[in-house]
Length: 514
Image (cartoon, rainbow, N blue to C red):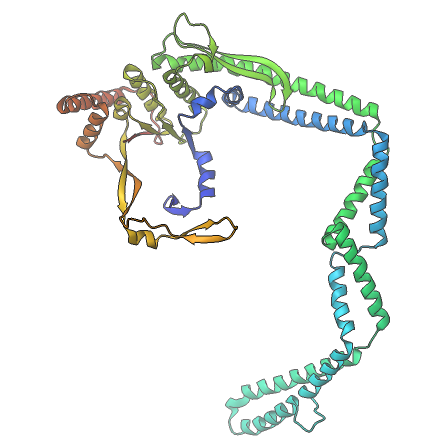
């Protein structure tokens, strides 16, 4: 079971996901697949262009939506007159039916049903009102009523108060109760006297209830729904019945909105060209230190039919090696080159991100080794000057560059039968559709095996050296330890000579997953 905490306080998943969108940026291996999609490349270019591009894209979206609405209005006006008249006839029929019902309040049916209950039981209500009055105030059968008994109690307490004033509050309570009983008796008597049988009103109420129930069946299921339907029918009738804008005017509006979309798209295209030119230069500068000294990169922008995102198709063209022609990124980049491309792209965006954003890289070093891995390690460390960087890696060169080193282990443990029985049973739905609660117990009676993940901070230099030696592998134990010590020493020296101003928020953490 997962638990989420923010500054030590437990929060729900929804809040955590909202915070993650603002504070954490995850770069996983699957993003290299998204990177080759044209729509994703266009979105990245817009993001790189910053506020001017994003705001212009919003203006394009607004203009495009207005154009679509103008087109819809024109198409609506172009509907055949016969269809329009048929719809008008149907609307008028329903409106006449609902208008004849004279609907007023949404709760009219409930109020009438209450009145019907009262009118249908007038005699019984009169009899019971008289019984209540007798029990409270005046009993014709010789038995003392509640008011009589309370009067006796009040008189007795008045004599007792003469000898003990502490009983005065009790006397006040009894006197108050007597007054309340008298008032209740007066009201129930008035209620009973006011009741009269009214067969004519009862018939009117029953007929009205029948009308309203029929309206609910046809236009409901509730009276409120029927009233809302009536209002919507009237609004549609007014819209269709009015002359509205002429066809020529709607055609002019549509043409004007199309021209507006074209103008806004042209402005967006210019901004994208400018952003693409800047991205080309910056990305090449970021790729060269990653063992791609001869890399070429261009942003190709080609026209398409205008959409809410503009009238441009954006394609990243890439040539990693000398003599190779520029081709779309999807056709030319290998796995390792794609990883470096993605890292360089993140570096280009990091300057626009708010300092303190947590960047998580999952296997960003996939498909690379040796000198390239070292270059990636240096680039990750430079990113950590402005951001907190978490990196999942199997590369010793990258792990050695980290400020902190965590080890992730997957272990198989035995789960006792007793703990299985204590766990909440899982509901299952059978073929008949009913739900059964099932607790699964191994048939052998032996402990059940499960996999757990443990994360350990390697805060001792010796443990970290051993871990990096294990990552290196392929050598004798002593050679691996010496190699790990050399990597840690070189990384420490490089960090000291790093000229980028360090922010307090920056920290590189490498997680080695075993």
